[in-house]
Length: 386
Image (cartoon, rainbow, N blue to C red; front, side, top):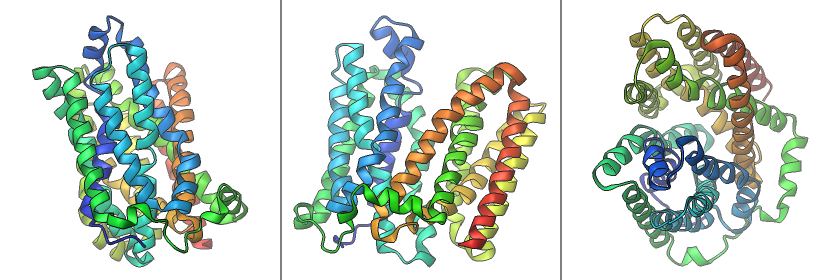
């Protein structure tokens, strides 16, 4: 094992990569004006980040198992930071898209590998609590990255957020390298890297592994790509809110998620993993049903906070199970979970968009709620067999 690294520092690494994903929310109009294109044309910089972010899981997990999870994550944070700094100097839109792809590729390796490292270091009974503390960084990125980058860009232009966040990523990567010391250049003993890509086959041969990958896919399909990304548009088109107001309302999800990171230990002690799966899934389904019936935007705002808490109750158990799906190659197992989540998100966004055209927002939210209830029951059944 590498030297002990504070979870706060690992959470900072998660914050920088999470902010790299969310920072473009308020910057697209300014980028479009800078390169004299439409916002829809400029949105290619978003896809340029997201696709490599998901696909890197195929190689990042096995590489981390072979060469050391924190070592690979440390180099990934540094290279991610370099990509952000270079993005601040981009002179063409294709150049910016290429640099966003570079940044997304290295950012995608960080969180799954650090989560797998925490699983290596923390006994299973304490693991979900430790992972919840680590996820504080990602949650704070969801809350702060968009508003902070918007304020900075309004005052000094769209390039400065890239430079500031890139500098922060380089500093965090440097701190990780300093904490690792000589271990940064040494392959850890007893790693499970001999399996390489074959570890994916080992995972899929196990019934519990197949169940977990399937659950992750439908988690992404119904929520990450389905209901959650379209709530802001629902507020704008259904309740007449402007983009800024919709952003603030949706940020309530982050407040609920942050509450989970503080409450994970007592919740786990009180309900256990099966209880959290059931309660979290049922609460998500109920909230989506209420979202479909909501008559006022204030109701949507309150539901966002509950959804944030309920989602992490449910998703947190699945993440923790992923760290134990293949203990001898945890990086690969967590990477497979993240890849399934990403693929589900991609397919879900297309399906939900089609659903909006056919049945509208409210019916689509109701269908997603029913799907989550079924998913929670399947997850609970799988938990009973594990």
